[in-house]
Length: 335
Image (cartoon, rainbow, N blue to C red; front, side, top):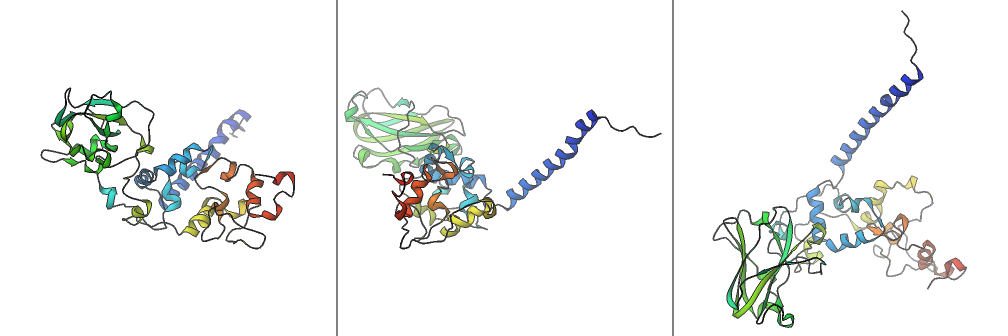
């Protein structure tokens, strides 16, 4: 018996599955290959990048246009050299977050006030509330010879990191020394400070040279506010077991072409050029030893203009270098 031809309805129902299912399989395989071969696919490393370079990440989030790898927190994809060891194994990266100096910026959120005592004392002890294991906090010690309301006489330590998970394995007599937070503002009044655990309760203790009022301020943090220890600069971090980074010229040119193929860019400004008689690259535009790169005109993290162009008015960016055309037409007349 001859099989009946399929109806139009049957064709509409069956055809998409015949086409789409192989497409999904292809996309899944492609993503798997990218994840395995990309130079930076390690989420823990990416998060560590942001913790140390929090200001860069924070600035990027404020712009209108954000580069996708930045928004997705994939720092290693662009920045790490091919074949770089993704393991950050020494220096400040091995240290506990708790007790280290973190971001000192003002956070417009309420701080929990935890008093040490109702009267002036020399030995101060504050029990901290039960804190979620994975939530990060910052805290600081405050002391004053007068009551807490007399703000003009208050001395404060630096903000220090705190995560319950860091202290979950502490047992007496193990303590975390908080000397890193006792800067010059409070060092004259506070002689020592420690964080320790007794049973399931966390405590902060410190001693003052004279009987004083004391208390703890505690604020919850999110990932982009953790910051890095203030004692270390970016150069120090990169020289302290930092994974190998891309060569500056490769990072500013070749890395871009991994995703933005030259053949698809259409009309594009040439790179690997230097200023000349009629062209002068301003000092405030980034170059690699004076050489023009992709990031000279495009901010690789974020920008106020489309295509991550550094100036929302593209002609203004052009005449920044091609000065002989400035004011040659109304479109090039910029302050």
